[in-house]
Length: 243
Image (cartoon, rainbow, N blue to C red; front, top):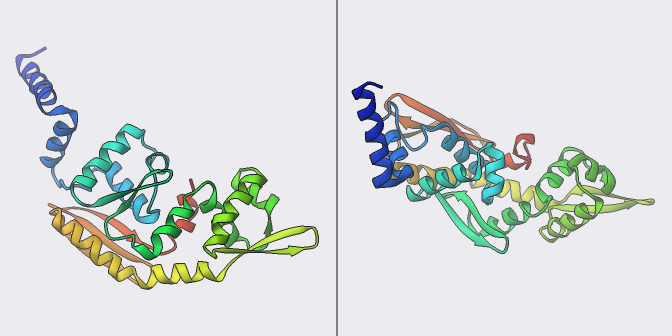
């Protein structure tokens, strides 16, 4: 081994010993071309997942990002430290969301969507209204009992309604679901303004690429390396967002 290579490895080892692996990795990222908090592809993926599905817990975020829990925990720590992500403690653990994307009027519904199989069941009902409990269980991959348990939360927030059809009970999207999505859609500009303010406070350059009632696309980055993100009020229905 050359003396130069030995010095490089020793320098890295000393940095890790003094500042810890996390401090070393963050310092290395900060000096990289096109660096920024979201230049890291795994962190950028986590940021988008939390935009799509606010109020996820650590395990859910890890699965959605295809990252090991320790890696997800580290990236969440970096994003929280920069003020881009916040967390709240619920009855079932700590939940995470991008700063500015959750308010008091939607928090309880978002929490309910992440209990048990509520989110994939709601997506299934929205995709094919009129499915029976058995059909929903088969589609989502759970038991009929799990479907009925999830129904309690979804009924409580007026997101679905059930109608008896002979010996079958069929499920349909309720008016509350439309109101919830409409509220999220009308609040999209305000959400973006708050996200933009948090990103700017963290030293990131932000600009809008495309804007409509159903979607707002924006770019984040500096030094010639920019990543694209999107805000959508109904992103939790997309197949890729299912747990």
